[in-house]
Picture 1 (tube, one colour):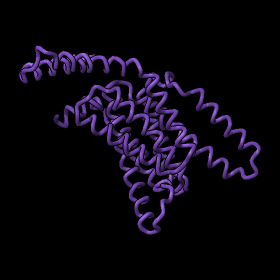
Picture 2 (cartoon, helix red, strand yellow):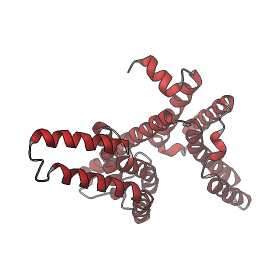
Picture 3 (cartoon, helix red, strand yellow):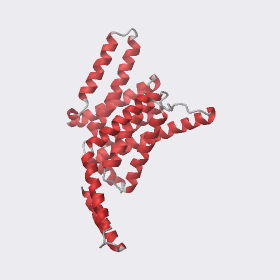
Picture 4 (cartoon, one colour):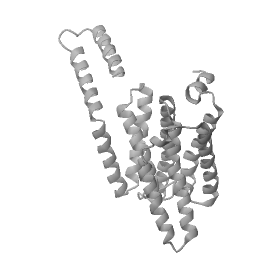
Length: 271
């Protein structure tokens, strides 16, 4: 695919869309590497970037922001932070915490609002999974390095510096990659990417040695399988029926098997 076609397909030849996408990449990649934007040298420029992304979306007059499904939870969490600020002894530290959480809450809202068609959703999904996998490789590297130095398994925490933070980050990527692997009708290479990201994020969740993260992961798996049970059931019957049809007593010839497998694969991809 030519660059011109890519710009039209994913960015509609709009420089604002390109700038927004680059800004999201910087935020998703830079914040985890810089300890989650917890310190001022990262937090201030990150908030400037997020504010710029908000202005970009306002200038584009996106209409789907009101359809964001987590408005209630987001507002409730901000309300709790406001209460903590009122009764806090350290007003400055609490205000800094509120500003950082507002930035965190704004990022998924921005991504949801910008990705208003199938192409943008797929692009953003690939981007988040790829960046997450890169962060997990860094975390796995430091985990193995600590084991070589000490001879013991130290809970993984890098590059986010805290175990629960790394586990929570993995919980953002794991459900996305797992559901994409199970339910997306994609090519084999894309399936491999989804499977790799799923296994890598699951491994990171395990080596955090955090029981809270483990329990949350189990709940996530149950929810993914429960809400997608109809899709999985349909795919199971399609595979079973195609297997039985291809290998019955009248289909021993390799040519017939290949043709029938191709037919059912095409049917499967359309379902």
